[in-house]
Image (cartoon, rainbow, N blue to C red; front, side):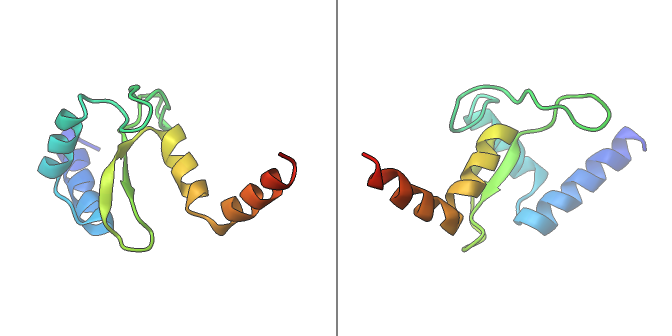
Length: 97
């Protein structure tokens, strides 16, 4: 796949999945100084060809609204936090305070 094709695919994916343009993604990245909105660190996870992944677009699964860009680790954490299982885990932990 050529660089032009990769950029076109990325542009389409951002628009279809998150409703944002590549330019909007790049603006968010610039505002965040190229780091994760939560841990303030750059992405370190690698993709299947061994290069560093782009920061993930964080969005609410309830509203669809885009919130920011996160590293893979923080994006996974947020996914778990939005799940009802976290509420049950919190109840469990409070019992043993």
